[in-house]
Image (tube, rainbow, N blue to C red; front, side, top):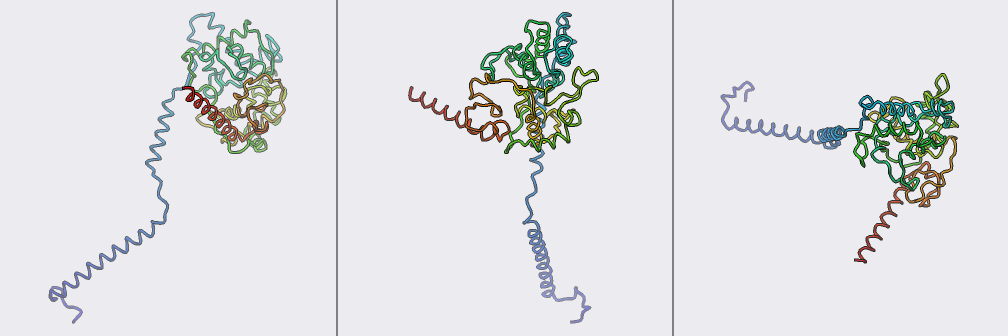
Length: 366
């Protein structure tokens, strides 16, 4: 058959066969392409469900945005002149404690030179920075540490004797009355019996290991030393009356009975407030760095105070309290540096056992 034969002159049977061949060829091409595509992508990991992740992130942001954190009322809103003056003096004592009650205090010389504001940032008003937002609403209250109901005066004097490594001040005196007036005033917008959102410390998960002071030294050197100095001595004002950056250990720092001597407290504090300028929204330290630098700071030498009367009910003692005796068999070193999860789990088992015994006894009684 000549090669140049016109297709329109080809017999009908031949044309039918040719069409079938073309159709079959097309089907085979599509099939082969599909097989190759499947072989190419079937071994690949599944692509993340971006829509679900985006939705989760949006929900989390919305949830966080729903929290309205406590804001301290302004002293300028006080209309009574006498009260306003007293509250202002109370704030002044919180901000410049050493100026009035420190080693060179103008009123009394009864504390170590730290200011209350060094632990309670922004005069006790900063969110998750050990603020006073819930003090007026929750005190008087029972505190397991003392095993008694405490009022605001007792709480303030605890700070003078422990965090300021000093002496208690007269509860009827001008200074105590002013401090109490200030604390009570800034808590006036919190309903009695309720806790202000953002008060205390923001939670921080336990490590699966013990906190490491050696690793903490590395963190301290890189991120804390420039302000608090190589030996933790801090930096004084030019007149040497108060600290610009407080001493973190040594004779001028808080003693071993202070709340910040507990590892979890100082780890939470530095995580969400340090280095300077950090906020709870934008922490600069990782969780491990916070725990480790806290371990480094709390293992340095500092003043000692007898705390033998603390925690009369040993079952209520925090897992990171560094002083025995304990309601468990874990060593003091583990209570000081961790790991804390095994202690928590053991305590939870004991609580569950006690609850089950109580429930069983009630059942038998009924």
